[in-house]
Each structure stands twice: as structure tokens, then as C-alpha cells.
Amino acid sequence: MHSQHAVSPSAEHIRRAPKVLLHDHLDGGLRPATIVELAAAVGYGNLPTDDPDALGTWFREAADSGSLERYLETFTHTCAVMQTREALVRVAAECAEDLAADGVVYAEIRYAPEQHLDAGLTLDEVVEAVNEGFRIGEHNAARTGHRIRVGALLTAMRHAARSLEIAELANRYRDAGVVGFDIAGAEAGHPPTRHLDAFEYLQRENFHFTIHAGEAFGLPSIWEAVQWCGADRLGHGVRIIDDIDVKDDGSVSLGRLAAYVRDKRIPLEMCPTSNLQTGAADSYADHPIGLLRKLYFRVTVNTDNRLMSGTSMTREFEHLVDAFGYDLDDMQWFTVNAMKSAFIPFDERLAMINEVIKPGYAALRAEWLFPRG
Ligand SMILES: O=c1[nH]cnc2c1ncn2[C@@H]1O[C@H](CO)[C@@H](O)[C@H]1O
Ligand SMILES: [Zn+2]
Image 1 (cartoon, helix red, strand yellow):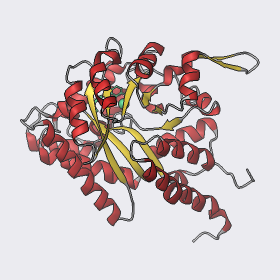
Image 2 (spheres, rainbow, N blue to C red):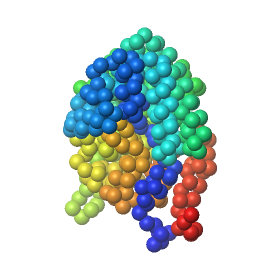
Image 3 (cartoon, helix red, strand yellow):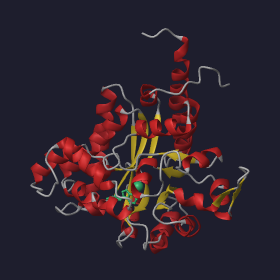
């Protein structure tokens, strides 16, 4: 029942509501002050500025380019300071702490191990350092009253040729903190089928993977990711909108691919702010997430890169509440969608939904009954 109490949630409600994050890059979420400190510690002299505030602004503006390729150039600086064990542990721990403080209760954080080998770490050492950081961050968060659980997704870069090796690495650590695999990087000119051997390997191993598809390139990329590669989820997937026809009278018809994605409940990891920056959408109000939610696609809300996109889960939801008038019920719907789509075992997803997410939203919805303290 939508009563007069179904008011638009405040920023404070949104922050306190339990949230689930499936698409967030470790090297896209560093605190600016940490980048400055790590750069000084490892002698990296190419930062555009040493002032943390100015650096945060620089990342947002540089990423606000209208092109995915230019957006991705900014990662040179973050990867440059993430080459030692200490740096990786710290960045991962801070990531878990920052998300927990923002009300995220479950997160899958991705990064490309192959981008952290410059100072001599091995792929296994990179994974172990990041996992250790996540465990530290989870504990620190719990001590401040925020519970979060973090799993890692290992990404292979789509322009490179190490995807099978990274897929094997992910599978090796599947019972030790890694929950799945991904490919990322410039989409145009790098179709997912180039990495078919990695995806086929993971399918034979009964493991999980998501693929960045339908962000900077359209339907063929989504089709390959789903029908050739067998992706469990789609990173972004916004261009699925190109296969949906809205008539003047408001009626909607889905093409074969869009219908398949909806019928099979293939989760879409949507990242609205990132899409505005790379030119995949023009405004929050025009973002395909509004229509896709109405059509009951398995849509989820994500941050992509909190540093480059100057965002957080709370901010992404604030933008959506503004643009589409969503209330706590809508937020719960997106959150349950995300939890259903996570790569951890089914019984754990169900317990998160029933014991953490639904009670969290119920408590927020009940607040109007009580005097404010
Ligand atoms: O939105 C995106 N689309 C494609 N690739 C991305 C996006 N955001 C980040 N990365 C790429 O993923 C790598 C591993 O985390 C990052 O270094 C960046 O190059
Ligand atoms: Zn991404």
C-alpha cells in the first residue's frame, strides 16, 4: 500500500538503507588523499596535483569527457600507486570501509591483477594482498557498527591477451575471496568473443562471470556476451535500449535480444553517472534505467568508479530518486535484484535478503510511527 507516508526518501534515509553493489572498480575508488600519500611513498611524480581536493576534482573533470577511452586514461594514475603489497592492502581496506560507511552491506569489487605487476608482485600476490585488505576493511567497519561483506571479481583487460590466465587465477581463488571474473577496458574494437577460451574455461569449471558490454558499443556486443560467451551478468548493458521500441501511444515492443535478456532475468549492472560521463546517456532523467525498471528487467544500481565519477551508492540513488521519484520500495526492489544476482551461494543470498535487506527497509519504513529522538 502506498500511503501518504511513501515520501521521497531523504539523503539520510538513502545512506542508512542497506545497499548492494555489484559493479565497482577497486582502482576507480581510491580516496584522493590516499593517492597523494601513496604517490609520495613510492616516488610517483606524475600526479596532476598533490592537493587531495584538487585531485578529486581533476579526476571527475578528466573523466567527464564523453568518451570511454578518455575516461579510462585517468586510471594510469591510480594503477601507478597500486603496485606494492602495502598499497593494495590499504586501498582494499579503505574501499570496504568507505562502502560500509555508505550503507553498503554486500559488495563485489573488481580489479585487473595484470595491472599491478610493475613493481614485481606476482598475480597470486596481488590477489592475496587485495583479499587481505578487504578482510581488514570488513573488520574495521564492523568495529564502527557497519556490517559489510566484500567479494572480489578478477578482471582481464579486453585489449590484452591474458584473459585465460586471469580466469584460471580467479578459479584458483574461488573459495578464498574471489567470487567471479570480468572483462573491462575499451569496448569498441575489442569484442568479448576474443576471450572465448577464458569464458569456456569458466563454464567448464562451473564458475561465474560478468562482461562489460553495451556501454560504448551497442547490441552486437551484448549479443556476443550473452549468446557466445554465456555471461551471467552484463556490466552496464545500457544499449539494450536500442532493441526496445516505445510507440507514440506508449506501447512497448521488445526485440528478440531484449526479450531474451528480460526473460532469462540477466542482471544489468547499471552505472548512471559513469554513463553520463562517457556519453552512454544524456541525463539521469533520460537514462534507460527508468524504462528498464518499468519493464521489470533485472536492473541493479552501481557506482562503477567512485573517484572518477565523484559518486557513491547513496549519490546514485539520490540522482534516481530526483529523476524518477523512486521511494524506499523502489530502492528495496533494486537492492533485492542486486542481491539475487550476486555470485555468492544461493543460501547466503537468500539470508542476506531476508535477514538483512528486508528488515533494514522495514525499519526505515516504520520510522514515521515513532517520535524523532
Ligand atoms: O566503465 C568502464 N568500462 C570499461 N572498463 C572500465 C570501466 N571502468 C573501469 N574500467 C577499466 O577496468 C580496469 C580494472 O578495474 C580499470 O583499470 C579500467 O581500465
Ligand atoms: Zn565498469
